[in-house]
Amino acid sequence: MHTASARGPKLSLFATVLSLFLFGALLVGAGVTIANYVHTRQTATRVASDTFDTTIDRINERRLAFFAPVFLIAELLRNDPSFHQPAGAKEAIRPLIVSALTLNPQISAVYAGYDNGNYFQILSISEAEKSFLEKLGGPPTTRFAIQEIRADNDGVRIETWRFLDADHRQIGGITDLRPTYDPRRRDWYREASAKPAAIYLCDHVATGNDDSESICGWRHRGRRHIGSIDGLCPLGQIE
Image (tube, rainbow, N blue to C red; front, side):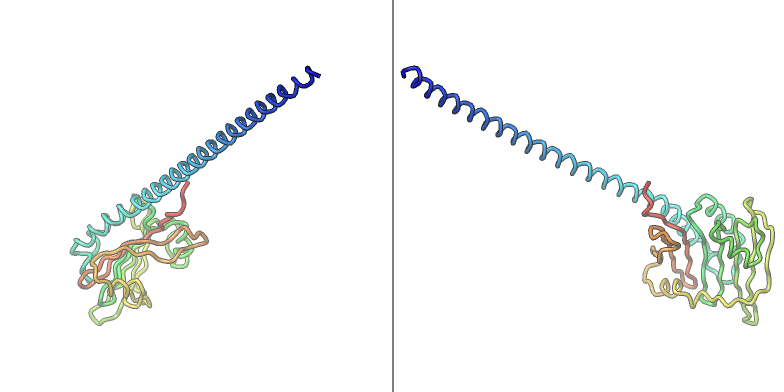
């Protein structure tokens, strides 16, 4: 009887200690779980933030890579007197533009429309323009195409094309075409004419099947002309 009664308090004490131990273990486990959750969440947030910053940096690098040479070329042309004159010869600035297009394949064209309907364009020929070149009748090895529309003394507008190879040598030409194209009727000319700024950035609709690729460029407005530099700008293609 005495022995049995002594076991009761011992078992009760053992159960109490075991309960306290299990409760402490649960608290420690819960604390570790909460700490791991907080740490994991902080790590995920930091990784997401770093990934976002890296993506933004890449986008900004692409913007700079595209727009820096475009802005420089636009400034040079904006200050070149021969580019301002509707009837002025453009041969002096041709090597500059062709070299710029060679060094900057993202630029597709440099062109200018004038208030008398004259038009000047140097087009960089890539695979996308091959079908256009074939329809036009240009040599298949054309790397650059120079288009000019001028009004003669009688007001008759005449269109000519010159075709250059990769070494900038003329390999063909088309003369005495009667153009239907008039820059003054185009949206890009009208929009630029209505802008108060002398030079500004423009973005056009996406091209092709890739929504991340758009035509972007600079417009600069002079007293008698609207100059433009356009190119493909794949800002969304982050590798």
